[in-house]
Length: 184
Image 1: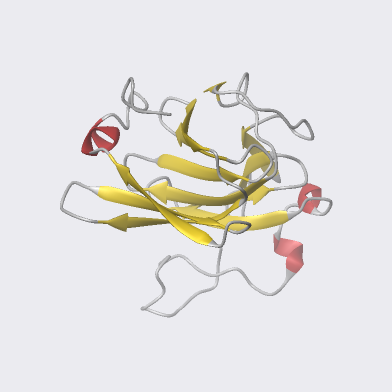
Image 2: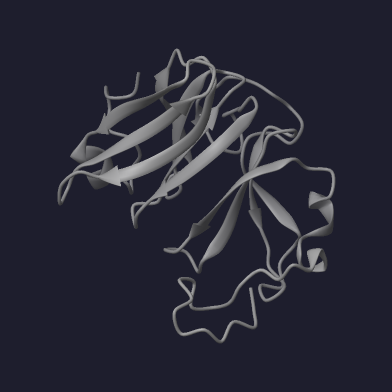
């Protein structure tokens, strides 16, 4: 990100140019299907790579880091497992992501496993939030009160939008993971 001079820019740090030279070289073979900005961690850019079954942290020209880093999953290896994000947890055809607040809970829809999972970006632990979808394709987080949220899941094959109320305790547990006993 660089070069933005608009005071109204939501990132307040820049914009991605139409110039693909600013994207990491090793993303060329990927199938990036969703992006999310982590506003609470130096405005890092997270990406879902459906073809390689991972969530990536993309470096920007300004960061000076490597092209991309796997945040969740095993590059090129589909699977269906909760656990530690880089070591044990596996994804299959992730299609969407939504990042919840300073607690940094990252929700991911997976078409391959027909699930929605959550990753605590603070603890690197992954848990299944809901399963049994036909083809989850899009996510949106909606505040419903000062402390309550719900997650909307677009189930493309079923032609529905499913509302998942999220417990307030999930956001209180942001530093230590999802509250025990809530994930389905």
